[in-house]
Length: 204
Image (cartoon, rainbow, N blue to C red):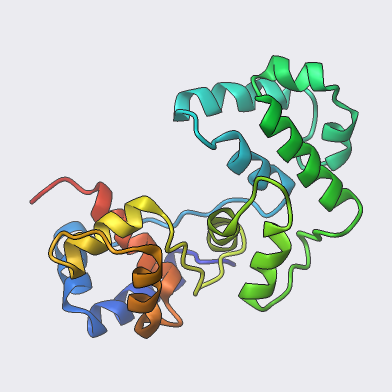
């Protein structure tokens, strides 16, 4: 089910009751939309592809990679030559990353259909892949796993939005934002979506 519209609304309304600033965001900008992505290798591959490039460039690279075959199958990446991956637009470093990811999935070190139920254990499992850190793992747990308390506090947009709402415009550090988010448990995933919603909304 994931963090679908119904669960998201439940979390947002709980947050609005505990934080006046969240209530103001909800009143001004409405309910944030769900951000659901499919569980599996392809979603994590997209995360690597999107690192340090524009959205347009990431989309173009992804379409070229899709020509190689089903990107939820680690064997597709394993069979692809470095030349083919470079031709699709991946840098040498990203080739290392996607090959590491495919190997972890293929040999069972990263079983995406049965990640640990504990979020920190799941984050550690994903972060063992080269090129995937805590932010990537938390994004995956939130969007693909729909984990209601996943909170990528290192995300720049979240920190900027939280600064506007709670720190008089001063951007908190990742550690400060994690500490500030503790009272929002078990709805920190909804808090992340609400903060992104506030970040991207036009001024009122």
